Image 1 (cartoon, one colour):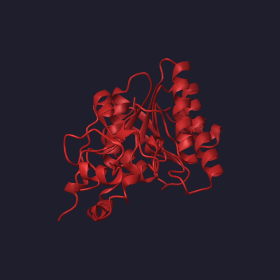
Image 2: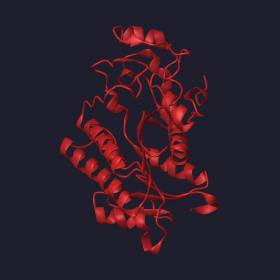
Image 3: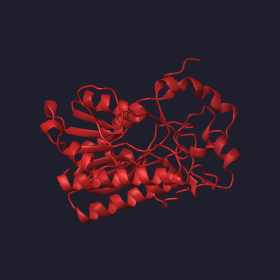
Image 4: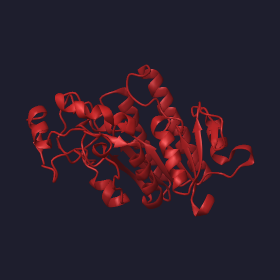
Length: 288
């Protein structure tokens, strides 16, 4: 066990936008966290690792410099979006990285994994409209880019590994667009153009709430594989949902939300299974 009864957790991509917050928040929850990334600030609790190298991955998870092995894996490392690298580079980096980490965890007996899948597997950027709104995890994946295709393949791989290893728990988090408080100043301007943010149904996830969801899954996710949409409880808009959907997706079945600005990326499953309840909203961060 980690410090104060918490777990010893490896977080890959610990220097990234979401990763930095996850490392900080998990430590705040009392866990012993080691951040793994290719680059990062030299400090206790950080190890430089090339995650496309299986030997380095195994060595890092087993305990660097005769350190203790980790008990859980939070995997966030990736080329994080389409268009940042060539399709071939994105596929080779992300697929190999995820296989290396999952396979090393299986070989080392690490039985709790939470990792970043992507909202893109829902069909983003919704040039082809979704089957219904709000979207959820119930319809088949609709990858529309090589980046998203890899995320779909990673979910398939995770499900099969859990079939092979009945004691293994892997939670795939379909994170929405990650935001930090500094990003919220731009949000009021989104109302001017409903189409500008239609690509993910006007969704977002506060990095702090992303970390909260991860902590909930580490504590509560059952054995086996499952996927969860992880978004904040509201949209990025002040315009009401019924108006937005009628304007942008008039042909799509709309199941009205309880509140006028409730998320259209349904988080009902994460709430029900993991006890996830977002604690932050851009509305409380932006002053009129």
